[in-house]
Amino acid sequence: MAVGSGLALYHILGVATCVALLYFSFGEVDLRHLSLPSVPAGSSSRAAMAAPFVERRGARLFLDGRPFYVNGWNSYWLMDQAVEPRTRNRVDRMFRAAAEMGLTVCRTWAFNDGAYNALQLAPGRFDERVFKALDRVVAEAGRHGVRLILSLANNLEAYGGKTQYVRWAWEEGVGLSASNDSFFFDPAIRDYFKVYLKTLLTRKNHLTGVEYRDDPSILAWELMNEPRCNTDPSGDTLQRWMEEMAAYVKSIDKRHLLTVGTEGFYGPTSPQGKVSVNPGYWHGNYGSDFIRNANISDIDFASIHLYPDNWLPHAKLDGKLKFVTQWITSHVEDGDKELGKPVLTTEFGLSHGVQGFDHSHRDVFYKAVFDIVYESAIRGGAGAGAFVWQLAVEGMEEFHDDFAVVPSERPSLYRLIKAQSCRLAKLRHGEGDEAKRTLSVCAGLL
Ligand SMILES: *[C@@H]1O[C@H](CO)[C@@H](O)[C@H](O)[C@H]1NC(C)=O
Ligand SMILES: *[C@@H]1O[C@H](CO)[C@@H](O)[C@H](O)[C@H]1NC(C)=O
Image (cartoon, rainbow, N blue to C red; front, side):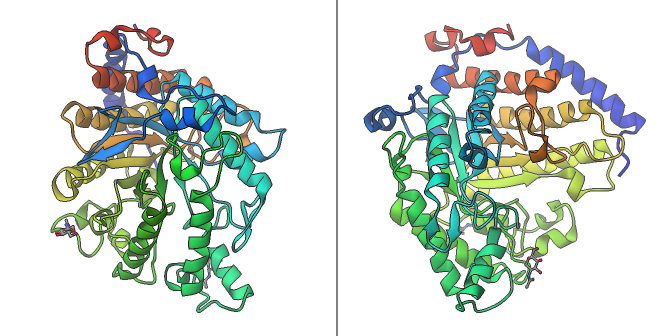
């Protein structure tokens, strides 16, 4: 797990110089048009509905008639923290901090199945108190001009996950199997999940009066965080589940974009050579199959995740960076050539738990990811954006993992993230009048 050879440091210094130059190369940008007009919580539903939806046209996202490239972030804990008055202000603080960096989309959990502060207490039984917290998250996002990717279930055990659904089915005496993967094929569990989907999509926000399915501050639904089905490496079980649930979501909500939530591993049906892009041989056996999954007609865009520390534990930093470029570039190429759909890097993170970690490593890593998105944006490509895993506000260390960043505590990352927002905004608006109106967000970079 050793990181940081002399060679790697050399590389960092080189890139750091580029980063410094980058800060001076952004013109005046108006970020207001990047995102939603602010809608105060409690305002009429009409006002919220007048804001535009993000759409897909071919391999690009569009907003307001212009290509939309995302600088985004993950804060999985928003709903949970909005439940209790004591911690609620963290939601507002996070959105405010993100908006100040020009971030436009947040990916977060809209599920909590049977865990502490559960949204779903038992199959089909929901806690109104927690639903109100989610209402608040959606309304606050709109108020701060941020859009949400709402994830709908967890492959992992945190916040319930597929394990909880399987447990419920056992408890009710209807479960077919004890396997966690029966989440994907058990008819009773698939029905449970559909009840949750319908309840969520048709939920009327008590603050804005807008049903979730009609709310433009939601950018997309994500079927599941990191779906894997190791018990069927052919991928057929997972593929059938994705097709069924995608069709079900679209039968209720045709306005929002939909994605699966995959990590991007190439599976058995991949074109020749692609499987070797996986970080290791075993990653092809998780039952996920990137191109086949993303090619489902009800799926609007593909997603990949990126954890070089976990996936290549023995690589040095420069090896990890090489992988970063290969991984994203390969998938963006799939979006352009095979799928004709956008590809979003919905999680990327570098652990501070590895030996030899230095904060400058994150600067270099983030920069590498941001550059690929920016280059894709310049040429109108499928690399539609990237989401840092994960951002937090001060005083919530209990929610940190080895990847968490409090932007105000990391000035160089803060500047880097903001610089990415501003150069994407500038591309979006060109050199016209709109671009000349400076918003305070980017003024510090001039
Ligand atoms: C399901 O997953 C949980 C959590 O990873 C694990 O403890 C349990 O043993 C799994 N159940 C089966 C039947 O594999
Ligand atoms: C995607 O699906 C369509 C049918 O819906 C098929 O014709 C096409 O070959 C598929 N593409 C890939 C890359 O699998």
